[in-house]
Length: 277
Image 1: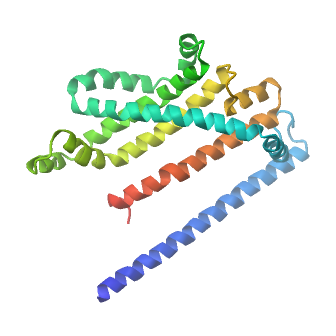
Image 2: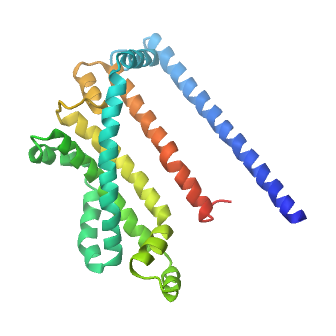
Image 3: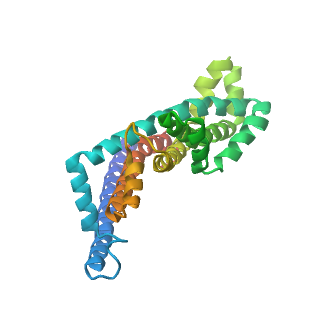
């Protein structure tokens, strides 16, 4: 009884310490970025650089306020996220089964696995010229293809790696209890490889995000302007406040997606697999 009370007290103190650490991290980040923004604004007002080329934070936030007032920024975010989520989902749905295939069969590993390893090193922007030619009458299809190519290979390789890292004792133990085929795959191999799958999904999200920005910058489209198009238009108009503002929005969305989608899963898996105290 005494030991359990001691453990409970230690857990409460650890939780309180974790909460304080989180607040300290937030305060440090706010202070740091506040100092950077203040120094940037002061430098702009002092004329240390050309404000046309390097807009001040006040100009950037002024543009964001105006774009939000017009509904332009919300519309661009919606269009971009719609394309991103759909393409990312297709990449995940294709990448995981193909990764399982390469992990389970030597022929697939020697062929499809080598292809995936080579194509993952190819920057996604390289697919833009081909996609424009292949989908010249369907620009949405061209962008979907580019996003899928940015996601697919990272997820495939992460799945393959995760399956291969499972200790053989897990498979032998499952086999002695009668697990085989789909049951072995669904109840043993996939759960055991989840940390690698989540890491691959996170990497695939980052690649998909970058791929879509490249696609929206280079692919002309009339079915909806996304953040990449706003970035392109700002460059064409030499409106650097617009360019910087869209870049800031892209960073914020990426940061929010990481904290909301992947960080909770990573924390859960670290605790579940005993990787953290």
